[in-house]
Amino acid sequence: MTKAVLSTIELLVLLLPAAALLAVYMARVFRGERTFLSRALRPIEKLIYRLCRIDEGGEMSAKSYGLCVVAFTLVGCLALFLIQMLQGILPLNPQGLRGVRWDTAINTAISFGTNTNWQAYAGETTMSVLTQMLGLAVQNFLSAAVGMAVAIAMVRGFTRRESATIGSFWVDLVRSVVYVLLPLALVLSVVLVSQGVVQTLRAPVEVRTIEGATQVIPMGPVASQEAIKELGTNGGGYYNANSAHPFENPSGLSNLLENLALLLVPTALVLTFGSLVGNRRQGRALLAAMLVLFALGLGLSFWAELSGSPRLSEAGVASGENLEGKEMRIGIPASVLWAQSTTATSTGAVNSSHDSALPLSGLAQLFNMGIGEVVLGGAGVGLVGMLFYVVLAMFIAGLMIGRTPEFLGKKLGAREMVMAVVGILLPPVLLLGGSAIALVVPAGLAGLGNPSAHGLSEILYAYTSAAANNGSAMAGLSVDTPFYNLTLGLVMLIGRFATLLPGLAIGAAVARKKTVPSSIATFPTTGPLFVVVLVGVILLVGALTYFPAFSLGPILEHLLLQAGGAA
Image (cartoon, rainbow, N blue to C red; front, side):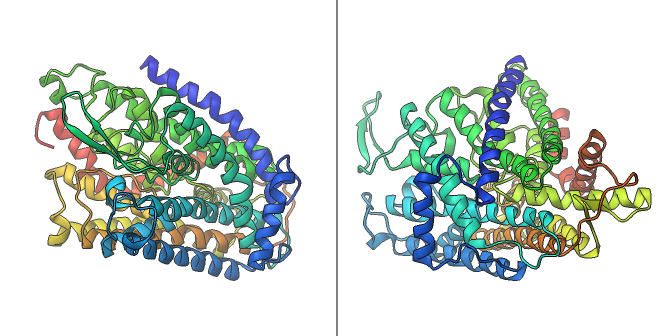
């Protein structure tokens, strides 16, 4: 446990100062101010505007902004689908891979276009170098930038008075890519290459193993994809083993840096929110609530994995030696910390098998995703989801003190409340409904590799991951079938828009309102009481929504293991 605590402290010591510095930079970027990179990047930004005929000073209503978000996402999905289908006749295909099967191509296109990066395929044996570079890696940048743009537009609404517009989608998108994601990815790529992550266009290498057998090792531009995969909270790995593969994550330092990278942008965006609304204490209050939730899930997971279970003890596995499904070179603490980080954000990258996690660890992972990835969350969508809960918490607080709810000087009315409830409850409807269908149709049951409670957990995990646009999976469920590819793809697509569009609607609604001065009756939103109320609301909503399903999945599995029965 000491090593687990120290590894967590090490990560936070690096994360919080880095996020604070990045937040200051991003606030200047999205306000359109000059930064230390402007001299190099401003010409690129202006060239993009000129080529794409974008009016840098133009503004959009929420409806126009939302239509751009939907259209851009769907066009990106279509482009990626075509690249996969035509892969066999396109260049940079040293393995001579054929076009991807139609249902897998649809699922993958939606997955990467929605920032989910769910993978029902083995990357190194399914996707060519060109598909990985031009298709998957490009969508890693663009889908992350879409989430960031929507978050900034929503926040912008709280800063404006009686305004009918919330900014320009195209400008926010371009600035997210050019000023934030590209520079960070370039730096991290170089560092990862220095640690041994592969970056090449050469053909697969044939080697002789120690046993004398022949093995073909696929190569590719891994470091560049690994960097944006983590920084953009994407998660799709170049290799099937994802960040457990030594070509993606070869050392202890690379593991730490990749874990740091997947948390960096979501954390910085919360602090950027405080800077943009002119109240940095507000950003710190939201981050404090997120870190409390992060610590609760991490504590439960550490306790579960380090304590083991009676069944493991019977098998001769000592407490703290539960290494099934974990890389020996990474170990338990780093695996658990990564699993918590990747499900608390919408990253979905894995450095261990989540299917091998003990039930209570799986429960923490499911809960992280189920509450909308608001425990730090994804690139933009985590902040949007947390603001949904803020609206709900302020409504409850307003009921308790008999006053119209306010936040950042804006009265919160029926429209804001309805949109927040839609953003909070529609993803659970999707994931629980999808899971229910999979449990009653033969095509869904055919994918089960495990019986009883664990099989239910695997199905719940799949649809929860899809609805939350996370992309991680319990790999014991066989999902590369038309049924799962199409149903999970639909859940991903609706889940994406179910978060982004209500966020824009709230931003537009508060932008049209006047700012009201605070008074002695105003509920303070920057102190410990607000953090407690916000965390309490999130835990209560999550418990009420998921307890019946989770009690039949990971909770029952835990009880069966403790009793010595079959899970």
